[in-house]
Image (cartoon, rainbow, N blue to C red):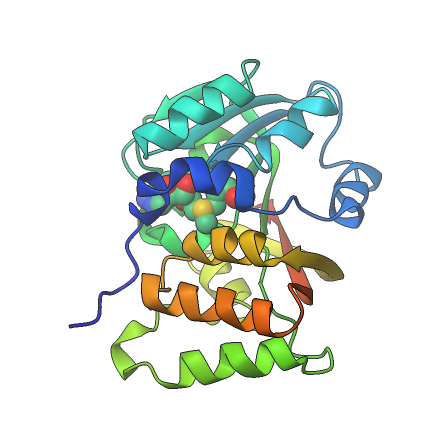
Length: 253
Ligand SMILES: C[S@@+](CC[C@H](N)C(=O)[O-])C[C@H]1O[C@@H](n2cnc3c(N)ncnc32)[C@H](O)[C@@H]1O
């Protein structure tokens, strides 16, 4: 029987996660700093921090980051990689956050794991009146880019799956549906939606590691993807998209 995506998948592959996940694009960080969301002294609450792919760059610009991460193995690596962060081990739904204590809430490739009926009210309480919520993710595949031979092979693997593998919730590039979910309850209003497009050159082992971290990929499928890279010369160019949704806290919902 096929498994459904499991939020603990990442914790089970914490070492691979730390080395395999690509960083977020420079343009994303520039946008956040240029628009005054992030800078020295910004108090950030980050949900689902993993091993610190977003935590590290936020600390690097001088933000004070409290990072929430439920996976104990991920949290241990996060502490080691980002000793300046305050790490809270637990889910975003279960941690108790101080009231009006943060300028910015961040969910980096984690919002699809959150129960927003619980998390949005909690963030509304935890943010200052003028607080903001920035939601972004790395989408591993850009539907607007030319289809590469490797992407054809990925599509063949995915097409063989049964119907029960899809994660519930909007698609990862369905920005409008995510805006609707994030503004439900009128606690937040969307003020910007951006998409950053970028490319990476990945070798076979990098593809094997990266696809191992995908919660909806089974080991046999990962091996097949890695084999495809070998057959295509040992390197592939991958085109990715990083959608960003920025929300302002609404004072009185
Ligand atoms: C795809 S990873 C993203 C990690 C990191 N933010 C990054 O940018 O690579 C999703 C993360 O969300 C965490 N997660 C899953 N369910 C969660 C929940 N209910 N509350 C907070 N984090 C959760 C997972 O443990 C994992 O670290």
